[in-house]
Length: 289
Image (cartoon, rainbow, N blue to C red):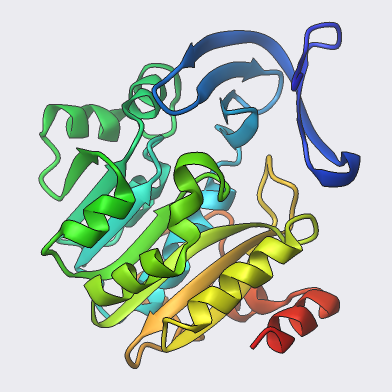
């Protein structure tokens, strides 16, 4: 089991016996939602830890190392992101970062598991105030939709400048978020100039999944970029994939807008460093096309 009572530790085991662990003081909350097993722990040095089906989703101290990199590269590369869709991200961290951009007029977060939103609001300090406003319908620039992101994207009449998929790994309820049909729905619902981003797993330990997702996205988007970043709590480096529609240049970001954000982990002035991949992974990705 990931939670070791004898050592007071939570360990997420990856393939080939590789583990990422945290010393914990106690388990604060545990529930089986309609979709997954949800646990929240209090760690010794990283605040509270959110776990879904035995996999680490975030720790409070350092969660920005994921949320900043998932959000700001695409938001700053797009010339004027006004309408944004977030699929998943029930802890609120991704939407919190999206709303830091003054250009955003409307952001929609679609989360399939209401239990994640409720537990994050009650136990985590990631985006507590934002989640409270969303639950009450009092956030003027954003809305919360409890539902299936795949179905929502297929059925909505909305069009978006940026689509951000903040999902769990491609198993269970998240599996369809990595399918070609879903990518095609996303491409269709982007405006003429649009960006799509998804997390793509551990570069070293889920290389095949990264390559498969990259290959599938290449069949849909005008251009596809891959990059990685060290994320606290994950088996780093962690992979990300970006799909481009239209003439948006993802290699360049707006530094004038970036200066207003005061970011901690992602450095827009060194945006190009995101694209540094291990040589063997880069070769696999390039050969896959």
